[in-house]
Length: 149
Ligand code: DQA
Image 1 (cartoon, protein in one colour):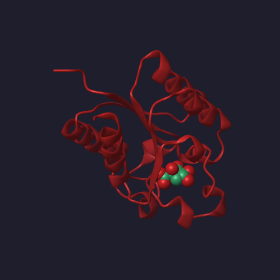
Image 2 (cartoon, rainbow, N blue to C red):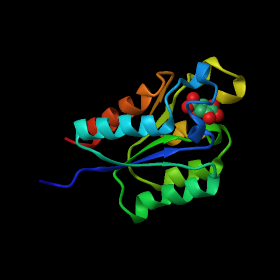
Image 3 (cartoon, protein in one colour):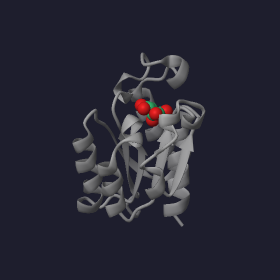
């Protein structure tokens, strides 16, 4: 059997606090529960995932660089607040040549104006927002249909 395509699933600052963080906006699932959902979905669609979270911009940049050095086949990224501020994350994503799905748990366009701009969207293949944790599953399914012919 050939090797499963490898997807790097990245989560930015404060997402480690899901479950207790503003549940009315982000829901009640913890990040570990979302990781389990992702693992199950990846299994169903024939992908393998490496699921990570960091509160540090530079660490996220270093991990995105691993897409090149360690040959990942796709990226799912919820850059959280760095979505709206980070040229460094945008530049790192630009270096890769794999499909990228930007995910947000909340619908950023129904929220404060500063959340309406994303540095990730211009370099992403597609964007999913507003579907809660389900967005991660949709993102993995979208990547599978792009990567697996
Ligand atoms: C978020 C939306 C961002 O605006 C916010 O800073 C986050 C989470 C989301 O998943 O809805 O931390 O990316």
